Length: 433
Ligand SMILES: [Zn+2]
Image (cartoon, rainbow, N blue to C red):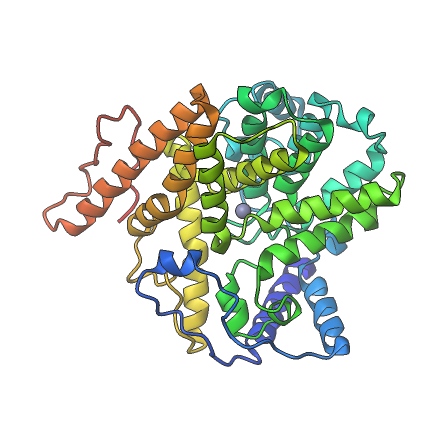
């Protein structure tokens, strides 16, 4: 049908556009791929000088390709989606929302029950839980318009960076805001910022990483001078949608300006290349025991850390959910690798399906990114029951990936043999080669 043809056409145009100016001028072949993720990327590549007109033209083209809300009502249903939202599905979704603060919340099921509206429905529910509509005197129509824009500006064709990931991060953020250490101290503005930043933190993600945008001289890389390119785009897109929806238009200019700036500071904190910077500051505060949550600046720092935790919390979930996220993120990496191969670009670290297996990628991700962050979060929470649960899952999931990696390297391994997690009580679904 027409809309399908448009998508195909739009996608192929976009690929040509990204790769049209392709010149390789960074070297991704760093010894440890995870090291490359956490070192500063500011030095990568030269800043592309672009005329304002060119940037404007390219941005409007990107908007044309990606702003699916222009096609609202024309988007074909994804296979397996529910065409009717009958009372039964809504009832089940509402029942799930009554347990939104539980750590084994199945966001994939919730997304199916809400016919792909998990982000909007979750945010509306949480805004009610905290009475934020009343507190900030929000116009409910504008709120729905804004949330609808955010949800639709996520690319549903991305295996990982889509609206379900945003909903998952938002649900995790809600759990962290409920931590006893934090909950009593948070102001309504803190909660509002935390939820909004979580919901919008990856909006309009193109499904490729920053090094890819830099080496293909994508206009976003030159616009943001090769630094926090994606995160800057997520933030500025969010600001654009806030203004377009008029959600904050009734607030004094200095207050809405402050909200926009704080959202930026939170979203930019999710740049994984700044991990060491945040981790060492966090560690220092915990060592000195000098965090004072009465101070707005300290609460903001903890919100940054909480969002970073929520963004990488997949390995802290129960195995069955964690495994699905792992496969999705690796599928997105492999698609980038396939694009790079097709256009004779150097294949980025972790993106080579032949060399980088899911278990190896996950073990590296857990060891270098997730564990160091959650060890400190564990200390911060004193530790809380949730934190203990999450550390338990990290340990079990890492053991599962280790077993799967070993199984893949053992020629005598029979596909019917399922590796068991170390002392684990989780069921392992052995679909990984
Ligand atoms: Zn994210």
